[in-house]
Amino acid sequence: MEEPNNAGYVALGEASFPTLDKLQKVSVIPLVFLIFYEVSGGPFGVEDSVQAAGPLLALLGFLLFPLIWSIPEALITAEMGTMFPENGGYVVWVSSALGPFWGFQQGWMKWLSGVIDNALYPVLFLDYLKSAIPALEGGIPRIVAVLALTAALTYMNYRGLSIVGWVAILLGVFSLLPFVLMGLVAIPKLEPSRWFVVDFSNVDWGLYLNTLFWNLNYWDSISTLAGEVENPNKTLPKALFYALILVVSAYFFPLLIGTGAVPLDQAMWSDGYFSEIGKILGGVWLRSWIQGASAFSNMGMFVAEMSSDSFQLLGMAERGMLPEIFGKRSRYGTPLTGILFSASGVILLSWLSFQEIVAAENFLYCFGMIMEFIAFVKLRMDYPAAPRPYKIPVGTVGAILICIPPTLLILVVLTLASLKVMAISSVALIIGLIMKPCLDYAEKKRWFRFSKISDLSSIHSV
Image 1 (cartoon, rainbow, N blue to C red):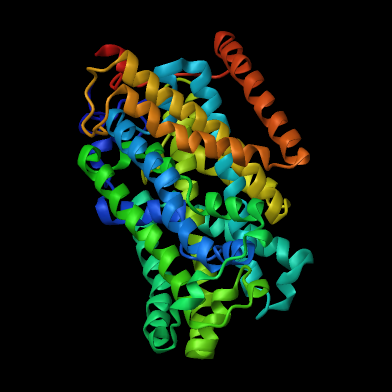
Image 2: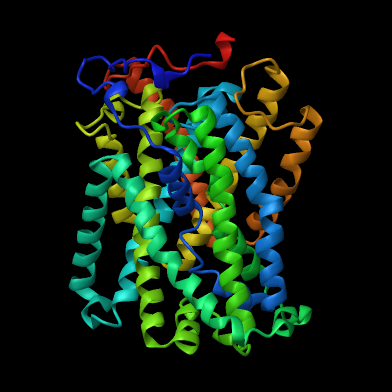
């Protein structure tokens, strides 16, 4: 297989795009923080795990859940992302294993899941500011603020992926530093006995599992912009490894500090409680810093998610799955149509409630992950000799075993979904099944122009 990063960019139809050789690639450190914001963004939102299950299960959850879910997903992303180092990521994997029809379904489900997820962040950002600016609580001022914030962050994505990567680094340092300081001032107040509190009769398993799942997924999202990564065969596995350590640490240690240094009031452990712990341990200044870090963390998650969503659409256009216009790049090398399309979806979906957003995105995300696992195993079986710059050191049986625990977890999450979420998600799945034949018909009738870049890697060429 050829590696598209080293070849000049072949224009879709017209020679109107910048060449890939002239675009600045993403290096290891910015990529680590892009993955960090794709998956986590910091410990904001993990407080519900303590409310649902108590300190012991919350701490164990963020240590054991990565073994069942995060590590298998990250390993598969490293292998498949280096096997197909091009934009589109998991869409290319599924297309190569199951054909373009199912590749398109994968792209539709994962793009929609990402846009639904991204609709949450401008709303959460304003929720943190409304205590200081009460006018943002509702009405016209809130609508204008959501639109303005979405436009500003969208423009940042338009200006270039390298800018987004370095912004992610700055936001990451700003968001995590107050928890380092909180840990230092908490050391004299730690009481280890508080970490072992658990009451199995009062565990809210639904809230507990959804909190863990929501805070530890989306490791595969970075694969959709693998074509923009500097030397992806080495950089992508390294970045995933470092990001895994960063994400787990950013969850576990703040929970360890908060549950060990402050007397347990389980009902108080909900979104935003870390800022109150900061006030108890360090004063008002630390609470304000944590509140600001939480707000700005939403900005980091927004720009990272939009980068993956928009480059996914670009990758699908390069594969001939979407009209050529989705493959056009701006003068900064960014997928202009994909960015505008994703931003429009965010604005249209921003009216959903927090609970509906989380449940709907989890439901669609689960279906996409099942297809990824199938593609991973099928490619191992059908093309065992295909070049894999990074390969998980297991055989076919081991590849199947890796996928079993996360698949069982997916089935549990799907059963926890409400009937409303199931109905909405089913409609979305049906739309995807109809959309692909419609696009094929439009291509046949030449209503839209479709093209395919000739130097993309293909498993069938091996």
